[in-house]
Length: 222
Image (cartoon, rainbow, N blue to C red; front, side):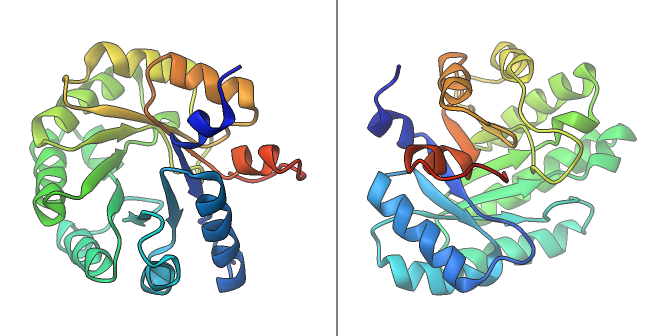
């Protein structure tokens, strides 16, 4: 079994539910700091408050175009710049899935490139919502994410019909460029699953459950 401290270094400790309160966000910030996670992944409206609260002790990640991805590129670009100005250091964007289905690959790639430009040195992760895609579309997204210069390809929002699967991470690993890392997110239900995703090459895990498991709390949610 992987050392818990090592495992936590790969976790984006996540709370994105619509009804999330500041007290709940504050709690996951406290837990993230205590367990040494890679980041906290929280709704954009809490970024400034959380960044002030953690005071440099934890990276703040937030979501853009979430969860459906079908906002305009200009809207996503504004959201991204606003989040960074508020203190976010990592951005997880959702692609326009309809554009991908329509084979508007230039638009999908240009949008990712636009957001990466807005991020600059900050990490950009690209959520492709694998449960809605064919394997062919997943492979195409590996190419587009690579070409656009994003830092990570990410499986899922956790708000659609399914989350991360081992087979998707295995597929990504065969088709992404050397500079692109992988994030498995949504439905990671056990420490064994978390360890397996990492063994398959995932660098980050988007989950709320891992820290709950380590705290011996009841497990539910993302």
